[in-house]
Image (cartoon, rainbow, N blue to C red; front, side, top):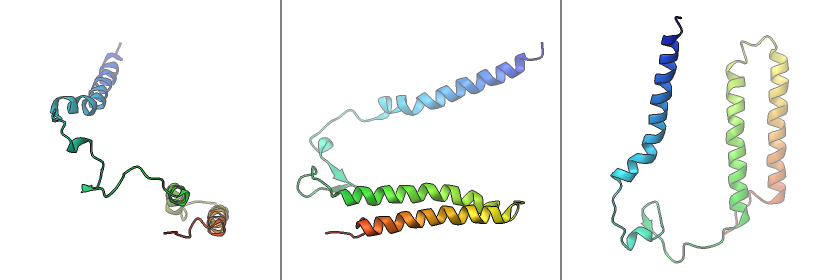
Length: 123
C-alpha cells in the first residue's frame, strides 16, 4: 500500500491547479473598481479617443489579410521543429522533399491570394 503518496501528490496538483485556474476569474470581482462613469462606456483604441462612430464596416480584404497572416503564423509552428531536427534525421532527403512541398503549397496559396487581389491594399 505504498500508493498513497502518489495519490496525495496528484491531489495536491489538482487542488493547486484548480485554485490557479479560478483565481484570475474571481480576483477582478474583488479588485476591480466599482464606479461606472460616462467615460467607461466609450469606445477607445489603445487609449486614444475615437473620432466619429466606432461602428463602421470594414472591407473584407482586412479579414482575408488577417486570415493569411494567421495561416502563415501557424505554418511557422510546423517548419521550425522540422528545421531543428533536419540534421539529426536519418531521412534527410525525404524531409527536404516534404518541407519543399509544404513551402511550395504555401507559395501557391500566396500566388492565389495575389491573383485574387487580397494583397492589393485599397484606401
